[in-house]
Amino acid sequence: MSERINLGKSAPKLYQTLVSLDQLASEAVTSAGIAEGFSHLLVLRASQINQCAYCVRVHARDALASGETIDRISVLPAWRETSYFNEKEC
Image (cartoon, rainbow, N blue to C red; front, side, top):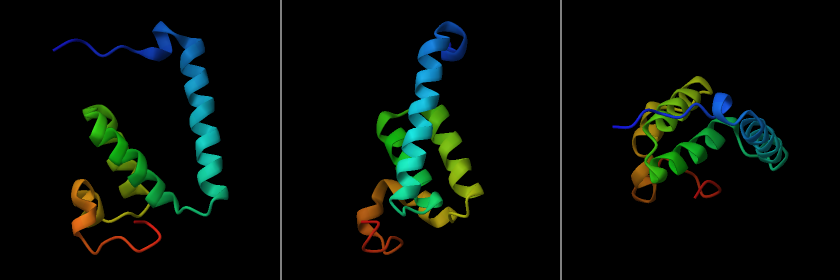
């Protein structure tokens, strides 16, 4: 397995751009009325699809810290088959 690249050290300008983009995305999510917990589930699902274990761990922890339940986090890969998500979230 290859070693993870520390983008902050190897490409600091690019890393700062990503941080800025993340901030803009967070502001857009808030202004759209999307709940913080659900926003963490959205990025968690993207990380699952991208198969980034580091990001899955970070976003799962963020979702838990924001009040998401372990049930919603656990069934996220099969969200269509559950009743854990409301109509707006689907």
